[in-house]
Length: 197
Image 1: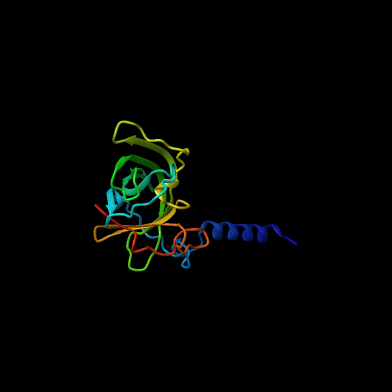
Image 2: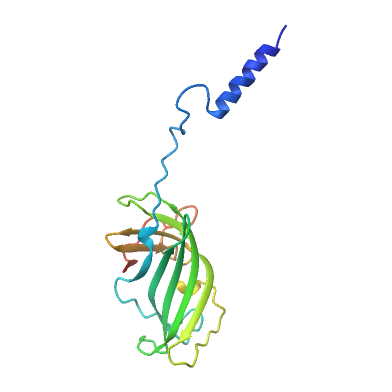
């Protein structure tokens, strides 16, 4: 009994099927969904709240201050990464009328395209805290009672969903009250979290 030719033919057949050979176009699996294309240029710029943000008491790094979100500055870096700077104004009163200074928190944001209904270029990613900088408006400095850790930016777990449409940035972080998927990313964009140039 000669098994060598049969085994050789079987091995060749397996090798061809593993390499995608043996006929056909050799393209991807017909059951694999197409990955949406990713364009980060539209996310770049300085984005401010669409309406005057609420004055929040008890700032994360010193409860004696009140705070208000000023802006998100987004820079498209290389490939699929954004740099995000969140600027927060500090006040010495609870009505946010007496300015004290500014805190800026910097994040690196690796992103991926995500498919959302009625959206053409939505992304999701996790913001990674990189730095914090503070300055006072009165020259007397800002007193922080806690080491900055990125929590003042209001990004929750850091996982977020974003899209730019009609000149508006929709940015939804995974914070309390936002429905998330199994990986912890928001399921939908929150229309109340809108920013403009």
